[in-house]
Length: 79
Image (tube, rainbow, N blue to C red; front, side, top):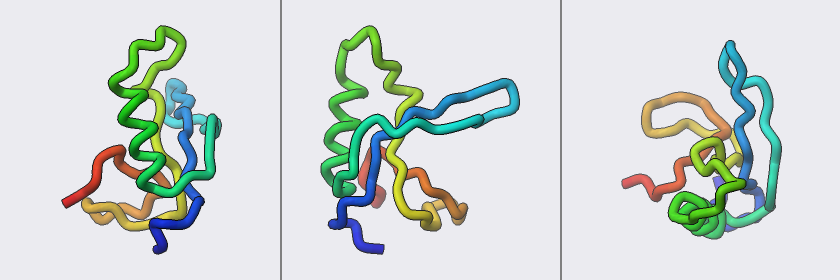
């Protein structure tokens, strides 16, 4: 996985009664570092029109720190 390539998007998760129904890309593509900076601003921001907890970073599928194959990335750098 190449983290310096522009293949990461700021994505809204559209949740339904049965879980995740769909996703909507709002901006991107970015590098992973740039996407994390944008997410940090969203989480700290005070915009009444944006629910930052429904937003995430979406990119190429990978195995996360719990061993799950996922396309979603944490807004924090993992240790």
